[in-house]
Amino acid sequence: MRTRRLTASLAAGLVALAGLSGCRTSPTVAAYVGEETVTVDELDAAVEQRLEDPALAEAVAGREDEYTRLVLTRLVEAEVYAEVAERYGVAPTDAEVRDRLEQLLEGQDPEALYAQAAAQGVGRADVLATVRQQLVRQRIAEEEGLVQGASEEELRAAYEEALPGLTQTALGYVTVPDQATADAVVAQLEADPGAYPAVAAQYPGPTTLPAVEPRAADQVPSVLADQVAAAAPNTAFTVTDPGISGVLVVFVGEPVVPTFEEVRPDLEEAARSSADAAAQEVVGGVREDVDITVNPRYGTISEGEVVPVDQEVVDILGTGDGAGAAGAGE
Image (spheres, rainbow, N blue to C red):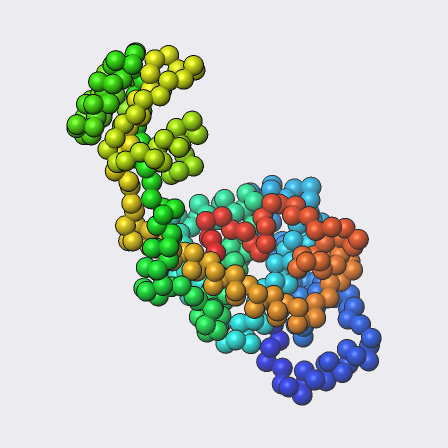
């Protein structure tokens, strides 16, 4: 698939020859990607190799033409990423791709991933291609200084900024028979907040929480939201509602504030996602820069996908962009 060892003079000669011919329409070529080609034989072999997996073959049964276009899309994208890796000098080795996949799986059985992917029409080669492309983007982000917000100082600043939205309310509520009992329970809980589980156990029911639970602001029942927000820690108040048989005692405990170390993985992932999005733009620029031509026998290229001529892009297998390998995230 790759003939990147062409000398500059030979490459120039091929470009000149293409100019004389007027267009690139060899019947043996499924797609041209810049100076590279995906041949019909390579495409057929790639499809056949994937269909050797019974689960994958079953997933695409009756949609072979669409699947061939999908495989061609992936082969074209592989060539685009090969061009990106060459331009920026960030090509990962096969061993590095396997190591990265192991990291992403976090001890899970890779065969389970491959089986899940096959059921979605995604072959093993496509899973590895997805990981390879992720590594290419990661290295571009590093080489081009696109990684922002990942330093210790930046992560801690992001933590402080996000903290108001991360802090949760410790909430409990107990339904008791009458107001007098409710007033007594309020006094008991405010005197001894740790008594909540024992108090709740005395009044079980659908509107009693057996233990205080941390709740984000949007998880607090709307009828209680304003009073909960205004309540001081370790205080309680009562609520009556026609839909509740009895009186609701609402207890608000100490705010639940996650530590920096607890939040750190999410902050780091946000930084990586931002860098990956920036690297995606770099890849998109290369994709636009190279001349991609698809043999009309298979369709045309539209928004990075090979689709039937004069038809909209349709994600026939629900796999999104690239190989869409479940669990081998970006």
